[in-house]
Image (cartoon, rainbow, N blue to C red; front, side, top):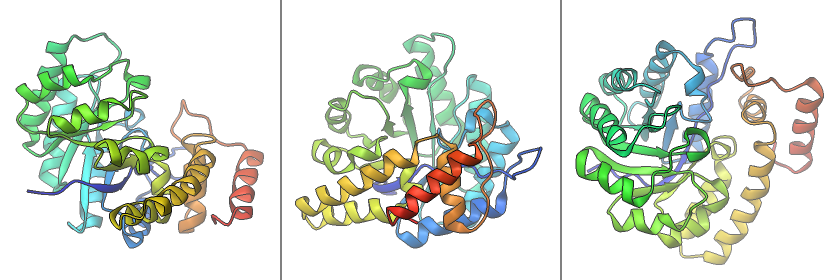
Length: 293
């Protein structure tokens, strides 16, 4: 059975810095390689940090193809296929499986207040379309759906492909409940890796670890060595960077990564606003002053 644990950066989606703002394949491949060389254990592809709900279905499918091709099975790709409607999510799941990702993930159906039965049926259809390990994406701040342990039990009962979840909810106490269900629960908050492990999390999935993966690998390695004071120190530094990296989410992460890989990663997809020249200049200058770049 494939193991899912450790540091899984939530990849950005680099764009060309032109009028079209289309997918920048060269930059995406460079970002993937930067992270693999740093020692990450997998990727969360085209999730919230990847702006997936602002991309077309074809763009999301192409990202799955690039991620699988660039990775070549070296680490796990968990491809986000969630959509507001079941048919699109299932199509994207089927495509992701065909191109060779290791797992899929999905936010629950959003916008309309779908009940528990409808949410379970959505995940059942997505799971069947791919027949890969499936991770739910608990992001109530964006979806207005809180996947509680009670709802997760219903999903687990109805969806045999369910493997775990990314828990991006402030209800961190629920991590223990998900772990007790036998689920692989990743914290969705880069601030919490060191502490979340102690209550049952298997790792972290977040955007800033994809910008500076070395910081979170250091936390992970110290946890594995049972150097908990060292892990706390590394977490404190990573948390300082985390706050900086999300200053103008997601544009700030694109600017920082563009500086690291030497390829402009473009602006966020509208309706996100681009960074002003002043904001970008200040962001990069402060990162250099801190020794992060």
